[in-house]
Length: 83
Image 1: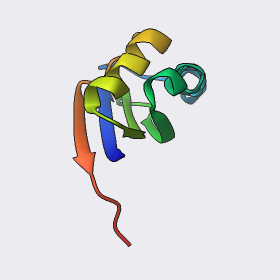
Image 2: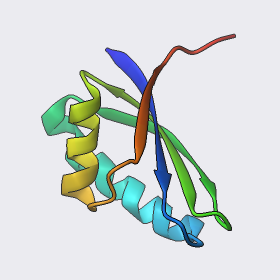
Image 3: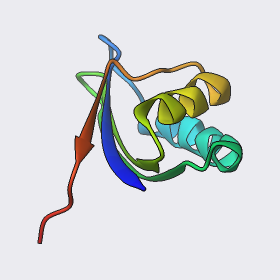
Protein backbone atom coordinates (compact mmCIF):
# COMPACT_ATOMS: atom_id res chain seq x y z
CA UNK A 1 0.00 0.00 0.00
CA UNK A 2 1.24 3.50 -0.79
CA UNK A 3 2.07 6.15 1.79
CA UNK A 4 0.81 9.72 1.30
CA UNK A 5 1.15 13.04 3.09
CA UNK A 6 -1.72 15.43 2.59
CA UNK A 7 -1.77 19.14 3.31
CA UNK A 8 -4.78 21.20 4.32
CA UNK A 9 -4.42 25.00 4.14
CA UNK A 10 -7.42 26.45 5.96
CA UNK A 11 -6.29 30.08 5.77
CA UNK A 12 -7.28 30.78 9.36
CA UNK A 13 -6.37 29.59 12.84
CA UNK A 14 -7.30 25.98 13.62
CA UNK A 15 -7.58 24.33 17.03
CA UNK A 16 -5.76 21.08 17.71
CA UNK A 17 -8.88 19.72 19.43
CA UNK A 18 -10.94 20.28 16.26
CA UNK A 19 -8.36 18.43 14.18
CA UNK A 20 -8.38 15.58 16.70
CA UNK A 21 -12.15 15.29 16.21
CA UNK A 22 -11.77 15.26 12.43
CA UNK A 23 -9.07 12.58 12.71
CA UNK A 24 -11.39 10.44 14.83
CA UNK A 25 -14.04 10.76 12.12
CA UNK A 26 -11.47 9.64 9.52
CA UNK A 27 -10.73 6.55 11.61
CA UNK A 28 -14.43 5.73 11.74
CA UNK A 29 -14.73 5.86 7.91
CA UNK A 30 -11.38 4.56 6.68
CA UNK A 31 -11.87 0.79 6.72
CA UNK A 32 -14.46 0.67 3.96
CA UNK A 33 -11.88 2.16 1.57
CA UNK A 34 -8.82 0.21 2.70
CA UNK A 35 -7.28 3.42 4.04
CA UNK A 36 -5.32 3.89 7.28
CA UNK A 37 -4.82 7.40 8.62
CA UNK A 38 -1.66 7.07 10.72
CA UNK A 39 -0.70 10.46 12.18
CA UNK A 40 -1.37 14.15 11.82
CA UNK A 41 0.39 17.40 12.62
CA UNK A 42 -1.11 20.85 13.09
CA UNK A 43 0.21 24.39 12.76
CA UNK A 44 -2.58 26.09 14.71
CA UNK A 45 -1.82 29.78 14.02
CA UNK A 46 -1.42 29.31 10.26
CA UNK A 47 -4.31 26.85 9.85
CA UNK A 48 -2.18 24.08 8.34
CA UNK A 49 -2.87 20.38 8.84
CA UNK A 50 -0.66 17.53 7.62
CA UNK A 51 -1.95 13.93 7.54
CA UNK A 52 0.08 10.78 6.99
CA UNK A 53 -2.01 8.01 5.43
CA UNK A 54 -1.60 4.57 3.89
CA UNK A 55 -4.04 4.21 1.01
CA UNK A 56 -4.51 2.39 -2.28
CA UNK A 57 -4.66 5.81 -4.00
CA UNK A 58 -4.81 9.52 -3.18
CA UNK A 59 -8.43 9.48 -4.35
CA UNK A 60 -9.33 6.89 -1.71
CA UNK A 61 -7.66 8.97 0.99
CA UNK A 62 -9.59 12.05 -0.17
CA UNK A 63 -12.87 10.13 -0.19
CA UNK A 64 -12.43 9.27 3.48
CA UNK A 65 -11.83 12.94 4.38
CA UNK A 66 -14.82 14.04 2.28
CA UNK A 67 -17.20 11.54 3.87
CA UNK A 68 -15.84 11.90 7.42
CA UNK A 69 -15.84 15.70 7.75
CA UNK A 70 -15.65 17.43 4.38
CA UNK A 71 -12.14 18.84 4.80
CA UNK A 72 -10.47 17.57 1.65
CA UNK A 73 -6.73 18.22 1.36
CA UNK A 74 -5.44 20.98 -0.89
CA UNK A 75 -2.39 18.90 -1.81
CA UNK A 76 -1.45 15.25 -1.49
CA UNK A 77 1.99 13.74 -2.09
CA UNK A 78 3.18 10.18 -2.35
CA UNK A 79 6.03 9.83 0.16
CA UNK A 80 8.57 7.26 1.32
CA UNK A 81 9.67 6.93 4.92
CA UNK A 82 13.35 7.42 5.59
CA UNK A 83 15.55 6.38 8.50
